[in-house]
Length: 355
Image 1 (cartoon, rainbow, N blue to C red):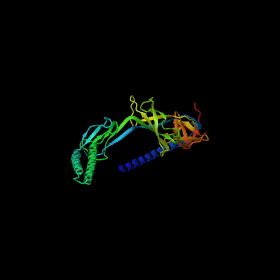
Image 2 (image 1 turned 180 degrees about the vertical axis):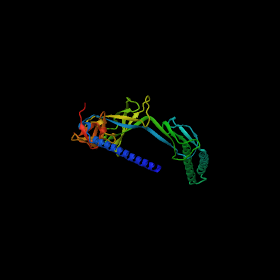
Image 3 (image 1 turned 120 degrees about the vertical axis):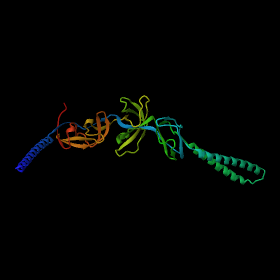
Image 4 (image 1 turned 120 degrees about the horizontal axis):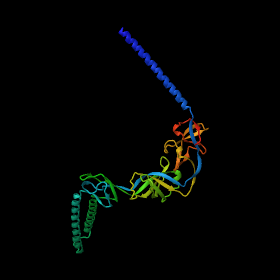
C-alpha cells in the first residue's frame, strides 16, 4: 500500500513538472514574439547630408612627449667597480665622475713602460754621442728610434685605458637609471647608466598624407599639454617623416622648451595646433555622426529614408565638432547623427526632424 502511494506521488510530481515546463516555454515564446515585433519596429533617427565645405586653415594632432636628449653611459673598459659616485635621480653635468673601475694593473704596466722609455732615451743619447765621435755606425740608431716609437705608443694607449676607468657623464641631465653597484664587474660595451635631459622635449604627432604637405620644417606650432588645461606652449617643427607608416600617416617632430613653472615629463600627452596659409575643400560630417571610435570609424547611411546601412569610413582632419571624411562616403548621402545606439546594420528607421 505504501509503495502504491509513493508511486502515485511520483507520477503527480512528474505531471506538475511537465505542466510547469510547458508554461515556461509558452512565456519564452511569447517574449520572443514580442521581441521580433520590436526588431521590425522603426527606430527614430535624425540625419544630416554629407557635404563639401571649406576646411579651416588649421590642424590639431595628438602626440606624446619624448626627451630631446637621452643617452646610455657605456663602459669602455673592463674590471671591477671600486666606487660609485652618482645615484638614480641625481642631476649630473657633462664630465662628472659616475664610477671608478680598478686600474692598479694598468698603472703598474704604465710605470714599467715609462721606465723602459726613459732607458731608451738615454741609450739614444749615448749612441748619438758615439756617432758624432765616429765610434759607432749611424745605422744602429734606427733600432733605438723604432723602440722609442713603440714604447711611446704603448704609453699613450695605457694612459687612454686608465682614463677610461673613470666613467664620466657624456651629457648633462638626470640619471634616470643606474645598472652597476660597487663591486660589479663590467666589460667594454656594458651599459652603466642612462641620463635624460628634459630641459627640451619633442612632441611626436602623426598627420595624414593630405596635411603633411602643408607642414614645414621650422613652422611655429602651439602645444597644449593635457595635464595643464588652458596652457599653451610655443613649439617648432624640427623634423618631418619621409615615409608613411602602415596607417598612411607621417611622423612630425615638434621641439618645445620645458616650462619651469609647469614642468612636463616624457610620456605625457599633448595636442599640437598647426595654422596653415591656405584653405581647401573637404567632405565633412558632425563628429557625433561617428559610430564607435575615431580610429575605427563607421557611420549609418540611410537609404530611401527607411533603411540604415553601417559603413566604415576613413577620417581626415578633426576640428571642433566636425570631422573630415576622406573615403567611404559620397556628397549628399544621408548619415544618422542621433539614434545610433539603437541601430544595427540593415535596421529600419524613421527620420524625424530635430525639435
